[in-house]
Length: 385
Image (cartoon, one colour):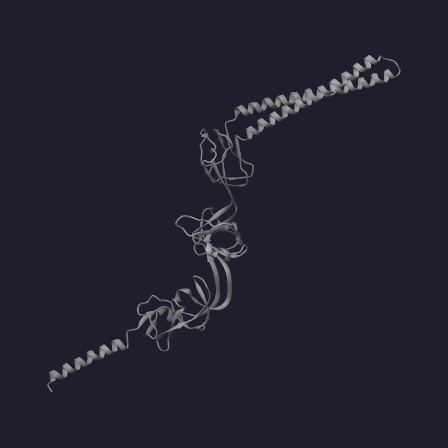
């Protein structure tokens, strides 16, 4: 046999061997693994759309009547106390009427007091003449005249009292009109917005037509969260259930909360899933958190919790409750079917099918992933095993 034939045969054998090796012993794939561990697993309900941090009370305030803004006693960001003057409309005419009414009421009160004194004197005089009539010291005609005069003076006093009360009522009416030109803080809070400038004319909203309020006031002494949950989860949530709140402004920090109210109706918004509004109170909150009304918030309402249970990252679970386990002794993957328990976005409880410490494949989107395939764990995960 010639040397050329020998070399050709060797090359052919090498090619056949490479072909067989490629199909029988495929190249290893690299996977990311994590150990099966024990910990807490919760069943939760989360909001379907972003929730909102709201002040405990908020009011959109405007004067009860229209008029020219003559006094603006606050500015945006001011802290105000309950009853503090926020703004005042031009009201000099009402102030003058109030002063006139006060003067008239004072005069009427003085006239009523004078009529009272005269009525008392007339009554005493009539009583004196009645005693003299008994001893025939005066005529019956004189005694009757005194008695009639006393009665007339009494009714004059009654009329004067009524006039004084009318004057006082008129003064109160003018005071009430005057109060409608002033806007007072209904509670302590912070001025969020002011829609108006000095000397502008303010017009109250007509019935059925919404206009911007002159002042928006927020009570920032406490806050609560409103968040929509899917209607299918509404019957699972109970008032008093514990929850966690996260806000973009605070990164991954969690705030403890509790459900305080579940809306008694379902919101039906066009092109959106039907939801139920849930309100939550913070259970642990201090002034140092510096919260601002309007922050976006996400909530997780805890329905059930199990501690110290076997769990895996939920991202490792495939359809049909399948998972892949990395076997470091053989450097191969083994497919298993587990029996899951409680589950959330982060962790799933394992009731049957795994043991603590086994290495679970997290990179389930890895190409070529299959039962029995050779694999190598990523360096970081292998080092931390």
